[in-house]
Image (cartoon, rainbow, N blue to C red; front, side, top):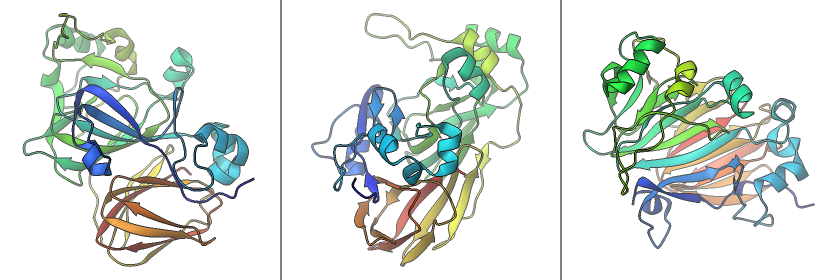
Length: 326
């Protein structure tokens, strides 16, 4: 059996109607493919399982790794909690057009309806064109009956909270929160392993044959959390060469590492894999076993749970998202 080491995966590029040309240059992929809306960086979703791209395990699927290495890869607690399932889906999303307004079911509803995890997620804005924005949550109180009426009247956006966004903005989206990414927004998304989305509203758009996309009005009605909050944006302090916590929930914890000097991360007591997503710069990463890997902007790397320490040596100023499950 090969020993584990920091793992990279082949990106799963998704060509989508609203895709553009930002993802390939950001990741350093040539030739540049047009119409790519998403890059699935680490995935255990059925029919979209990631494959290792580096080292002696190159070509092995994430499924094979979990079945072979179990707790050494995921952590004992995660194996007990999720079985042989990688609990997170890591993506880049670049919207060249407004995405539909959506909601995701929670664990209870998703289990009953789809035998699946629910979908709590977070967004980190990597880039945003001037005036680009997104929807997160309600701006005024409504109920399920009013929701159906607003969707039918094409006025649903009137009750949603809209934010203009810039690089570094963070939004936490627990299952049940209505949301949508706007045109010109490029984000990193961390979410539960689930591909269940209820499409609420699609701006009455039609395809080439004059048909609109399917809406899930009734399914969404019971999945929506109608609570109104005063602010849906996550506020944090970006401190150089410190770990800044962005999100901490039962599904994942995510920190921002903004570094320009050698940095050590002690992972010994986590009992979890860690995923690092490089959003700016390039660096070398070395673990306590001497495994060394270069990482650059647009790459994601999975650190196995049995790793005790990682050392980062940036060659320029770097920003990383650090995510684990505890």
